[in-house]
Image (cartoon, rainbow, N blue to C red; front, side):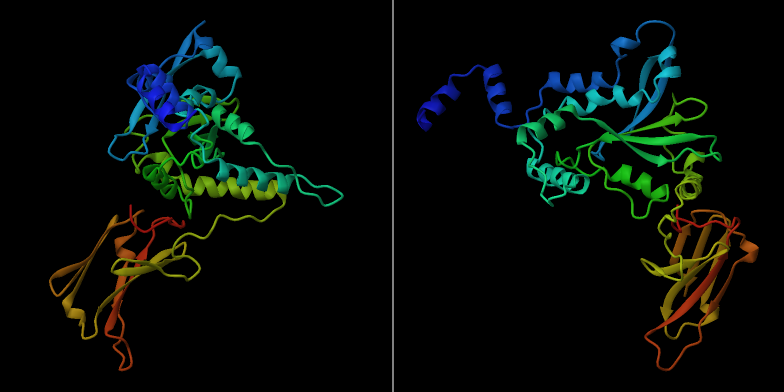
Length: 362
């Protein structure tokens, strides 16, 4: 068919035919019905959970679009299923990741590379041959299924009474070229992951009890999404406990990467740098070379640190954890003739608890 004939055929199409024609060629088209179906995918009760007593479980959506607020959603599950079928959100959230994607919008070249790498690492042959290629049709079919991936934001440990906080995300979000979810990445950073994982598309947060049985628990907007939430305050230590336990079981010595400021390696921030041990934080603030102690005013509070120099604020920090103001000190380095054009103010903060901080500020 010539190009002019194809153009005539397009002009004679009905709206539905045009929509189908565009989708067949990989063009993403989202209608009002599509958006409504996507919303219903995470607000309706699964059909196989309609019989018997029900239990409502809440969870939270983190849209990748930062202009959209976090949203608390509800799922209704049969109590019998909750006692026997494990984490029900995995199956429940699948429609949320399939409603807008049919597998045709996936970056198949990137998907092909990953599939080949997986085959190369898992398949070995005595002849040293390479594994066969994966067809685009097979890859598109895998992407269409859109399995839900779980990222354990907080692992279940004895300290948190075997309660995990999970992120639920699109398993092929990166391959679909979904945008980064910066707020979800920030949650991972707050939970002590350094560096944090790259998370794509809309993310869902939920709570799961893993002992004596695996079952979903409610995760609420506000009390659970605040960075001051109790689970968040303990996240780093819970994950470290989990890793230590896994090392004991496997006989390996995998450690969580050192936190910022540890091992004597200064973490540079805007206007200051800092290091830490389990007992204290040391903050270094560069001042003018001719700085005098009488020109400096340092104010220590349990959760904040403020520094004024020559009656101007040069540092104002809201601290990640509490310190003991009575155990905090500061000193001004002696000026040296061959020094740079700065004189360092060195501040020592005594931690209330002997733990590693994932960062210095809240």
